[in-house]
Length: 120
Image (tube, rainbow, N blue to C red):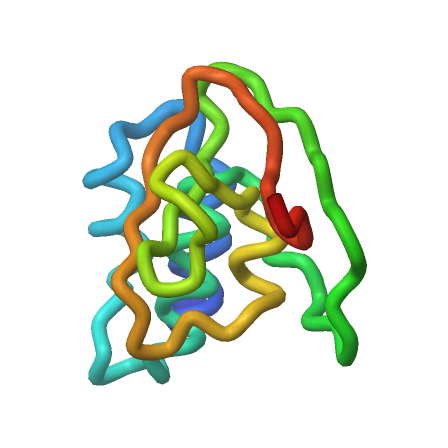
């Protein structure tokens, strides 16, 4: 008998991530709201997209991140709290901050650096 739990399906999808198209991996993981909380579903989608687990939440935000990302890295733009239209933050900073109810989107970067904590 095979283990067909949600966690087992997700692990199979994650291990096959490089061999499957993104929609195939998500279908294999069966990330449905009936099986998972919305937070857990977002966590799993993030892990499938980025190829690594989400960082642990921190109690206090750090000062300036400044992480330099490469072409193709996933980054976020938040219209609600960004200082200007060119501001973008890295995946880890986005997950470690509260953007509930904000107008944001994620995109694949062409290069740049994280603006999290930068007041300019």
